[in-house]
Image (cartoon, rainbow, N blue to C red; front, top):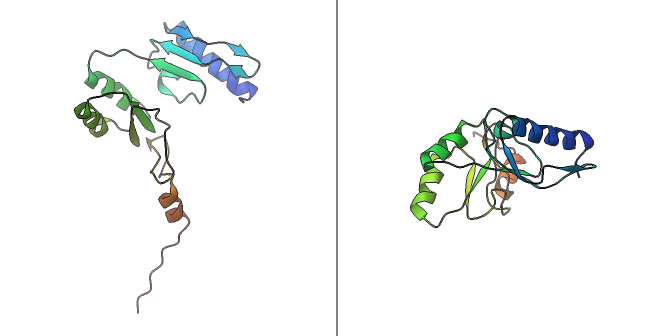
Length: 148
């Protein structure tokens, strides 16, 4: 459950985007500390919802004229945790994997999908390093050298 100040911040971000022309397709309301699952369209890149990590139940839907336009918008972000890509075209998936500046690309599932042995983490301001069993072991291991 959200803290009161987090719930208010999310609602403020929704209101900021709406004031700059974004459309709320679903949700956008608050009851106590709960924010209804919210879907928005037309969120400008220069508002908080368009350029920051919301850490709340808000998704944006943005149209694009070409795949390269979508890639450019994603890569302009200061963040790059994971991307969820829905496609049946393997060539498109490979192109996105090569072009997106993110820590991982998940095909046909949510970008938060993970399995413990899988490296999970981001690039840019989305964190340093990776999570997962191997990476946890490396973090907890002190490498030493003995020269005889």
